[in-house]
Amino acid sequence: MPNDKYLQKLGAQIARAMLIGRKPNQKGLAQAAKIFPRIKAIAQKYDGKKLDEKQLKQMGLTSEKIAKLLKPDFGPVLVKKGKQFVLRSTIGESVRLRYHPDNWPLAKHIIIESAKRGASVWHTPGSSEFAREYTQKASLDVLEDFTPLSKAVMENLDVTIYLEDDDDPEWRKGLPTARLTAGREKGQRSHEILDERKVRWLYTGWPFAKTARKLGCTPSFFEKMLFSALEESFSKSTAALVGYYSKALQGANLMRLRHDDGSDLAFSIKGRPILRDLGKIGQHDLDIGDVGLNLPSGEVFVSPLETTAEGHVYFPKIFVDGHGFTEGLTLNFKKGKVESYSAERKQENFDKYLAENTPSTRVLAELGIGCNRAAKYSGYILTDEKIFGTIHLAIGNNTGSYHGKNKASGHLDMVKDMKHGVMYADGKPVMVGGKPVER
Image 1 (cartoon, one colour):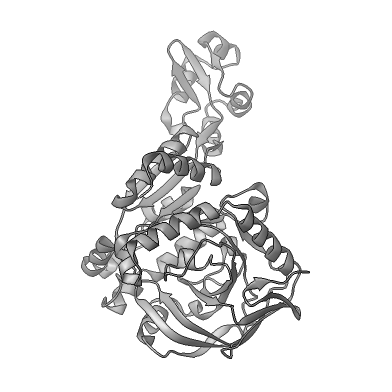
Image 2 (cartoon, helix red, strand yellow):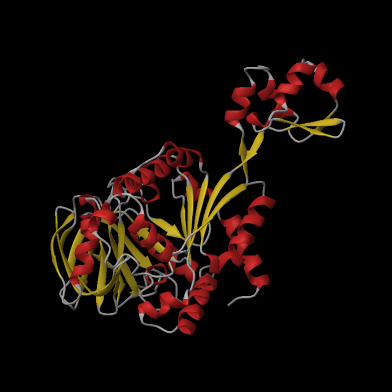
């Protein structure tokens, strides 16, 4: 496991990558303006500067108004520092951090680094064991409730960080479908609110030993691979591959995937932005509404037009979130959605996933291209989908940063090795045998 110095560096890198910091205190200043109409202009002009009471009164603030503006209800917009006062036009961003007790050493550095940048972090622990027990024992009413508190959280977040807390990738196994489906509508609505508000989000992986064993690999391999892929996320090689594929797909209409195993799937991406995952969110990303980020990083992705997918695709092995592997899966698409499917082994895991999510989860939602040379196959989708030489397709939700229109409660990624395949953009091969086509 990396030492504390490395984790501190990573925590700082995450805070920077997510652009965590302060924002205009619009709500607080609007409320304060009811007491003193000129407060917004004055706060912006003197933001962060120390002033004495005499100066404030010269601006028109009486002792009574000063006392009211010192209240925290407004942010506060006025803070007393000894005998002086400081006006503030900004307020710290609200960050939600979910973590597992095992990765608290990284979580604490994210919290501290965010605080250094002027943001407040609401942090909550979780684990697969607790998620399973809660789903088993909570009343169905509670699982279904979308409370005012839950809604208020979604409506006030600026950033949400998911530091992997799912240490058992099969924790849903054996649970009644009725319990697993109980919260899917509120889950979908939560996604919608976050997408509508363009809340920035980050999903960071973690190499739990239990996860490695459930996936069928050794904990030492899993840990070394994940942190190597994390380092490679920021390499020139990854940047070059991301640059190639984003350029190759730019302005394309018809994508086609063909493979020696018989797969032949076509769909349109006309008008959809080509998105990049390169370890940080930049102004360009914000300008086009790309507010999401994964660590490890290294992929190019795009949302197909929802009604255009036609054909079939074969996946030798996929991991179904919460249930386990499904092997030899063939998906048949018609008018953009999975019309039928079959699997050679453990089809029940895929069956359960579709059953516990909204029907719109059958729609083709994403084409992704792996660009990280350090990522190796393990069954862990966060790194699998970044593997150089692979593509991944997802079914389900593709709103928000994906720039699609399909609202669904789930998003299931499925990775395919393209060593014996070809990917075409408007009839021209852009990937052959898993490698970019040199032009």
